[in-house]
Image (cartoon, rainbow, N blue to C red; front, side):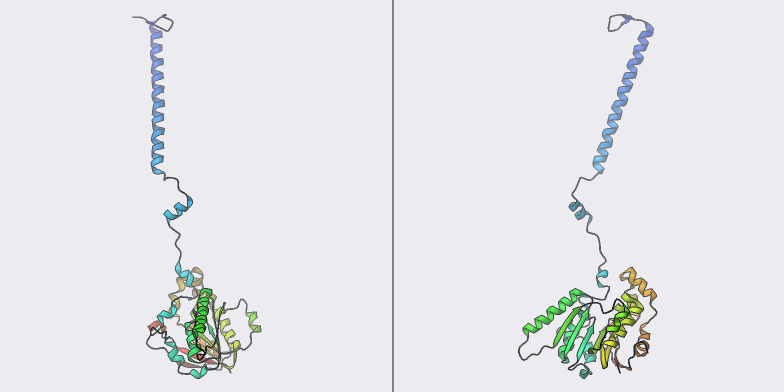
Length: 300
């Protein structure tokens, strides 16, 4: 049977084969286009399911969590806010070092004192009141601790009765280590007693051998003739536990050559010039790490 085209013209056998092939090509092309559309649709579905929904930056921060911070970096100077809690013997605040200092109360009575690294000022205030000092200046590198100390003094003054004398106490924010050794030339004697209690390790770890040696020379220069430096140095074993506070402190620790066992020789030597050293005592009834000798260096 012959086929007809659209013009009702009969088709020959060859023309019939050509039409069949053309229809086959059209069908194949339609199938490929359909397959392509299906694949694109599937890909879009996969992307839609794997991609998280759009969120505001604030929500993304909330979901991902805040970046973690090393809390120890806040205490690279040993400026622990509750430091005295580890050294108090009872609830009424009694630092056990007061027992050692109390063996020689005349060293403090009616004298002008400087307390280096005074922290929040609790021990400074107790020394000033217990031993009836003339005046006391406390200095610390942590401004927030100094603010706490100032608030404590203000509170004491408000609560004091006319019969209760409050010594002249001042707390100052600052770094005791000077920016340059040349500034030592302007130092003048102004104190009878300088307290440096459990501070040498932190000066050492942050400002190296040179910083600690400079601090020792400054202490000597600020003392009047016959003045006393009361020193409570930490042992070198305690340095190791703190060297991981920061990369800089670790580098400083590794560079230390001026060990605590060398301090006395240096303080009595020609670079500083103290005349003598005596052991004042060692605190009792405390953790092993806090049983540190308290020394008295006298300026001639």
